[in-house]
Image: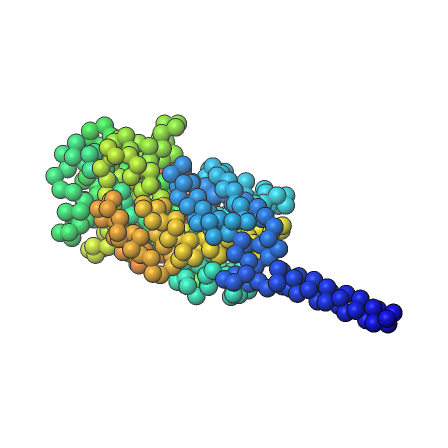
Length: 447
């Protein structure tokens, strides 16, 4: 009996152990279906709460648009919480550089095209190349056109992915033009093939005569590139050499801007009264034209009394449309993020077709940089000619030369500042910018 009892006890013990092992396997041994890269749908492989921060610039209406992408990700990943940190645009780059160097950077952040080269040199942002090629990523590098990488791709490695893009065009205020006695709309001029520099000068002159501002010019390089390209000119050759002084078409663009500033047709944004930005003055019917991408549209659309539309950049070549600059921002990830994998996953969703669709629908603030979602733009009821954003994207250009030389963009903008303030004419500006650019490019190449 003793031996039999002992056998039964052993058998019961073995059965208990088998049940325990089976229970453990069924509760935690398998990955949740639908997960990417071995993580469950909550975005964390162990089910723990993950908290990320994301930094970006933007006006209040833009920030609402950016939040849409975060909300869409959090809906599918309930264990991930992302806090959006708005940072003023005027000191965004400085704050970003300071935080990175101090090891206190946000997990993911927007990076301007003119800043990305500087960040890469710090060694503080993550190389995204392998991750984008993995099954964990919501998007692949091949989903983006080569022309949209700019300086974010260096030596075959990717350090930032375009969140979307913003081809520049003109916004025009219909009320201001009517009050100035402009008989034809920019659209009518465009349809007949006369939307050019001469027409733009005539219209902005009429607006200026009423005591309002025709066009608000900016020292931002994207504006300057657009004026140069709309005249068939170039500032750089294929090797990245600065050729302004040798390029007659480029010099003509400087002369045109100088003439428009001196005549009062153009007003420099830097000379506007404190607290009165171009966008606010446009909405209060004090400005006829502002140049921007789609980022002003959400705010303008909320103003029900504002009548506005898009028109391509005026040309001086005889062609109806010429390339204008494409403003682009990248999303990068801090190399020292405590949740590096989760930050990369969120980044890849945010820039994917799904993420861009969540952000850019219903008068979003940009144009898709991935294919298949252009209807987000063409389907907009406001403004009437939203399709010009797609047209401008198709022929527009992302600068990939000036941004490569750290600090060059700012140095040239400061020189341009003097001409826009009326303190320096076009010839002196051309000489000064050419000298500075050639010096800095030579130093950069000799590093």
